[in-house]
Image (tube, rainbow, N blue to C red; front, top):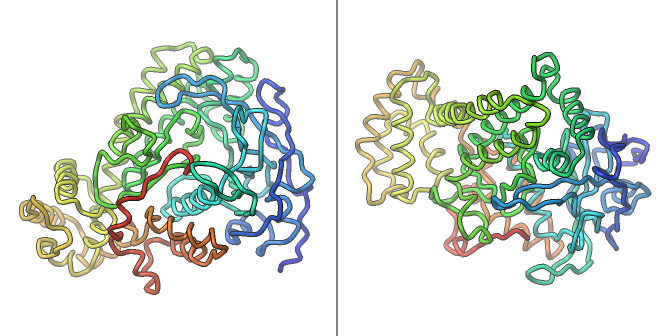
Length: 484
């Protein structure tokens, strides 16, 4: 065990720590009784200047049992399209800011806060492990996200849909500020604090905006652009967030709050990752539109500081083009194309329709297409039984082959580039479930192996090739809810 000293003095207060009770309060963690280490992200720890190996003293901090008095912030938001009013960090405590990279560390599940409302402020092992692995999987795919640093467990019983045990995940981000923070300050009458929030964003995250004619409008434009690119990134890997409420949207364009998320298995544009979402508001094919809707809500909340309605609408109007261009470019890379040609959108749309009609596995299809032999002879797709269904591939394969001929470079080089883009592994729901079941018995071996594989998901990892196979039949019965 590493003996590197770990001290509360290492942390600095979050940048927003002194904004008054209208925005932030300090609250002690309740902590975990009999805490045990579950996972420690040694790679991320070293980047942050923390010990490579978990220490007993570090365990006290990340289980909520240290001497610190963390900070909790208030925010509001629209949940499933309806104004929900005051929300806030109901089970999140910000330990502080680490000098390395100016990163904040937050504990999720360390007990009640002033914003817990009727909740207990706890998180369970199941949801904590899913967030840990989910955020690290997205980081491995190169998609902007919060990160997971540590997972602490405890025998403390917690009641959700069933009796479970408590856990805390320590997560890291440059900032956890959300659309909902802006909404809270705008709609609950804190104009001075709202201006301070925008000043902070410009000083630390959007410095170029300060030099623009309308700095706040420029920040809105940056957030809109990052959100559009984030939605495109999600769509390109088949990621479904599950709860895209405005309080779960990052002002830095990060993937935030991993609850009932899922990666697509069989391609279904109407896939709903959250069984609580009965109307399908946050289905896979709705995510891009919801991203735009949430940005419009943010624009409305910022309107008092911008005072330029036409400017706001012009900025919001860029979203669709930004998203469409970003998504098309991502699919071009997935298909091995470096050039941008006029017929590309039609070829991509036809492909997605065929994937749906033939119920093809999203991740496996693109990885199959990335093989040397398939790029040399795309007609092999028509011979691969796994991807056959009611709709033949013949016409699309012909068009795809003709399109690839117009690219520079060999089929081998194209395949190599595609394998560096199309992951062999994603965090499928059933893999997370198996890791959870083992962890609930005290065995984190599969979780650690998943973390390692998902850190480089495009590599072969031959010893774990079974995790790249199509999911077993029983996986289709798995469901996720807001407590997941």
